[in-house]
Length: 67
Image 1 (cartoon, rainbow, N blue to C red):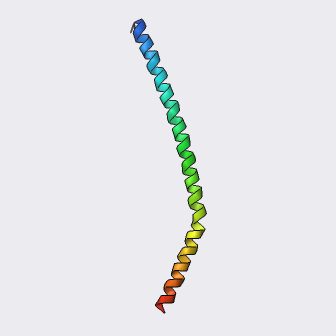
Image 2: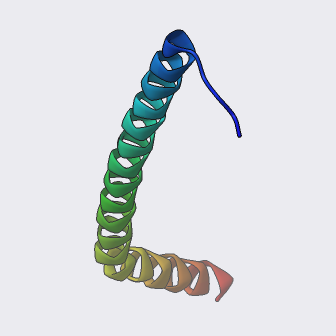
């Protein structure tokens, strides 16, 4: 079986701890990203009615210049 020195055990513990901290940071980042995506989606949806109104206006203007 593998026998580790005191120092190797300590190094392993430090590495394991560092990895866990990184995983935790990644989860936090992912949550924040999800939040931002949701906010962007909401904002985009709220703009849709305005965009279709403007498209209708443009259509009306173009029809006016066609005739």
